[in-house]
Image (cartoon, rainbow, N blue to C red; front, side, top):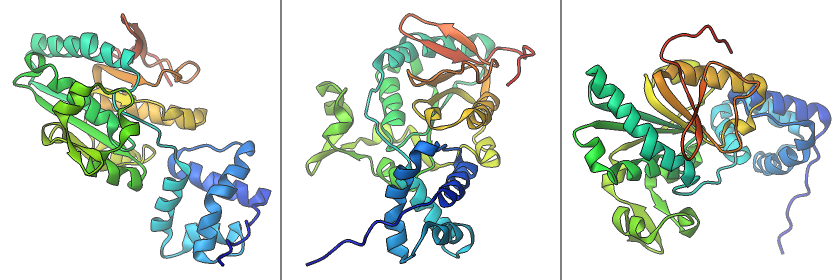
Length: 292
């Protein structure tokens, strides 16, 4: 008969060391009330490495030759990745019916190249960037002749593997109609696989939003989706990430956050636009003197 190893308690000093280390790496913030959560989630890693306490695990993360690989394991463990296709449909209607036509009309009027670049920041298992691709494919008359690039990024290697594979179970389709499943997916065992027509519009990459040099390599974007991500950041981390979004967006580009997220008390470099179905943030056409 097999017995599991006893739980190893985490003291306050160990909690602060690990909490601050994770925060400095990626901005995810844990309050004092989260000690039990961190203890429970990371306890299995102590057992895996046969360590006696969390301080030894902290030193492993800082100095061991496997520290980079182990930090990836930590990120996979502590991040939450609940998502599904066509999430927050009211915001998606704003994107397809109002924002997208506005961006295209503006580019045409300015004589710009027919290029549309969209970033799904914190794309998790890929449902969001693939949803954006499906929405664009549903409107061929609007984007015909346009070069479309949708970039999905996330800090978790585990979820990115799922996104690249593009195979999804029933929980991912809770807001997806049968017609979209039939058009954009193929049966795969007891699940569904995303079709190449959708996949070809999307690039999936690993990215830490706190890695400013890597973020800058993305180039300029017309629109950024970052939904249900900054809720895990404290104020300083939010400021840092939002500043990078502002730098990556073209003038008059849009930032779409989750329905429970706001830039109130974070920054005033974005204007809040009121559309029929939702309110979204927009980068002004020219510097306004605002600051983070």
